[in-house]
Length: 271
Length: 263
Image (cartoon, rainbow over all chains, first blue to last red):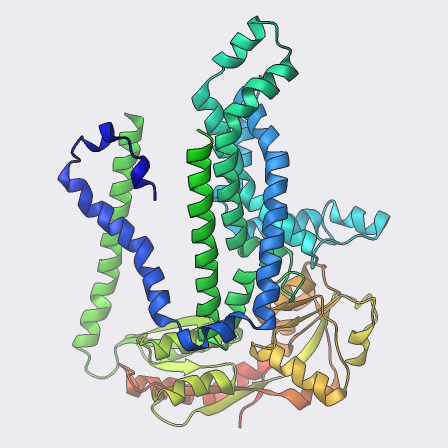
């Protein structure tokens, strides 16, 4: 897919042959388990396994919450990335480290952290419950929050990277030509960050689809409300391994489509 | 430069880790090879709910059999059953349901018929002091209560479903968790008002939850079967461990943890 776009100049340079061996192992490590999944699948039963009510509910919930969470990542994470890349603020490095935390934290830790903040006895959750009678755990909102928490750094890193690579000189020129900060942002900065925003959104959406740990710790698991595809896979493997394999393949298929379509759009259309 | 130093340090750690692993495996493997009768490693796969009891029994067994190292692997019963069926080397399997043991016996992986060494029943777990005043199973159906149960796919959920059918009380849980410890966790964190868990889970949670007994619990007793595995590398020791669990000492330890007697 990406082969055709490789500049011929780069492909003319021969690679050291030694690189191929670890590269092949790395590829095998990622690809072979998926092959194992394909071989283990009960293909004749596949349609039946994938169209059960539980599976359809989980798929619908995963796609809807993933889309909402990705939108939240764009709306909130986009501006955050601009601030991190362009803002002049003391302690920006610390701020960035905090934003990247969900990348390195085990998701289940993130889920527990969310629970201690927004759970019924949590710091904010207690007040939400007391003042407004709102509780967040066990709701679809909790699923969206958990997904946004884990996916946000993917978007921020992509957008910030795009802005840093572009550098600040275009905005500087716009300013010398008399553009206001708002005008320069709209006309110069936004076009610069669009490719990063597109690829970041794709990654964020894919991450949302795969989210398990934070969701199970914070949101619980109930069909149609909080049981997304990964949670259903985890539950199905208790009794019906074939069902779990079928749902896993569905997740693989959706992820491959998202990355293939999204990445090619992000890199070809906008750069 | 700094990156290179880090990379070298990382590699060194990695190598050190590998070396340590092979050294640890060395003596055990050689001991097993030259075993006269009572030395080597006995691998026991046990349901997670048996953690406290079996850890205590492990110490007793090792004291009675010097030179034997008992390795306990705790996990969900169905995970363990899958591991056994897929060829994980082990000597003894103690499951938290007949269904998971059946997976193993159906695959011909059990050396003999399993023995039920303990039973467990459900109990209602509430916040300490039972602030919502839950007194019966029927109380759990009250609309203003947030109740958490296990999903029907796992043994504790199957038991809850059985009680619902027997009593005609239909619950509307806010969540159906994938394992009993997650169900308990939602109660200890204060996010659920009540949860249906095993009586032994309430006992092991000590003061962080309060247990409420209900008579209908006896209609869905969960059996804990144990068996020596067909491919057990230490078949004789394995049988002795099973004898300890089903014997007086084992039964006493299980009773202390809240389990009912075996059959």
